[in-house]
Structures are given as structure tokens and as C-alpha cells.
Length: 233
Image 1 (tube, helix red, strand yellow):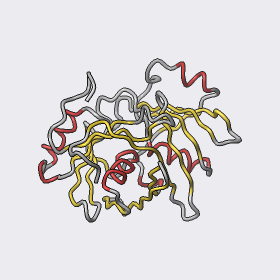
Image 2 (tube, rainbow, N blue to C red):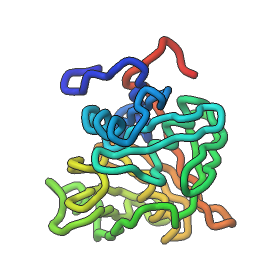
Image 3 (cartoon, rainbow, N blue to C red):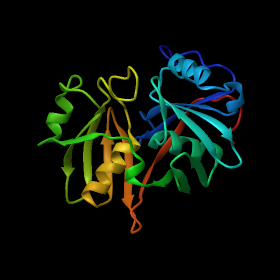
């Protein structure tokens, strides 16, 4: 791990999910390959807070794809970048969550999952007039609750510039700005009814594609930050 990143206990992989085209950026994700090492909510919350990422995933059954997602503040029934990262790491086609089954697929350098907008915890999606306004933000805008600000970079091409701020009352527990947020991208794609190419945070990339059945696919690149074992899988 690089300077400033937490010490990672044995058996935990750290990934960067939704990396940019140059392989940089992405949202850090901790994945505990054997959830039995942290058997209850208390131990899982302690580890999640120690790692300090916006989410950490505990794999309770890798064969069935049964996973448990935690933020530093609470447990989540669904989240985007944790599922994309876990599907890539374990080469899963189905992930089992309290809200239902999430289907995953690999397409070249991108990993995709499909999910329903109603599975996503509430977020405020606020459109700004320009990319410059988005990039000029030096911190969270005033207010409470989870905020996703966005602007068209090229509306005809479906390119969006976005940033995400959990703010007080959000579920990320002390995270000031979320680097790449699949769930919010899913909601925005569902609201606009079209595929999007989103640049979020410092330069992360999230792709979306609404499906006829009401689900939305979200996809992106995944890269290693720290390996718990010498090879993937």
C-alpha cells in the first residue's frame, strides 16, 4: 500500500473500482474473502471503520455470491462499486443480496452489474449548469443527506461530469467526498432514460446502460491496490 493508506490485515484485498481510461483513480474497496473471520456486525463495523473506505465487502459464500456490504456507519442492502469490484475479483456471474440477485458480466476491460433503481438508498441528484461549476466545488454544498451533483459535458454523446458528497446523514460515515458512486450513476441513468459515460471525482469513469426490463447496468474498470494472495481468483 502507498503512504497514507491503512494497514491491511491478512485475507483482505483492496481494489480500485471505476478507474479512468488511464487506469488511475477509482473508488477504493476492501473485500474480505472469508467473511467467517468477521462473524458479526460489530466486528465487521470495526474493520470497516479501521480501513476507512466508503465500503467494505464481506464474502459469506463465494460459490453462491452471497456478500455483505458495510460502510463505516452502517450495513447496506445494495451498493454499486462494491458489487462491480467483487464480481471482478471472484469472477462471479450472480451476487446474492437482501434485495435480490444481481447479475454480473465481463466485457473486455469492463465489469458490469445490472440492478433495479428501487434498490438504491435515497439520494438527491442535483443538476448544475456547467462542468466548471462542478469542478469549482471545494467541498460539500450546504445541506444534509447524500448529494450527487452533475452537469452535461456533452449531452448529445451522453457524457456527464459528476461529484458525490455523503454529507451529514449520509451512509458513508465520515467520507467527505465519494470518488466513484455506481448507485447514484444508476439512479441518474434511470431518471434520464439513457446510457451515460460519467466522469466522477478526480477522474473515475462509470458507464451506464438502461435495459427494457427496468434494470440499469453499471460498468467500469477494476484495478488492484493491494492483494491478499499472489494471484487473482
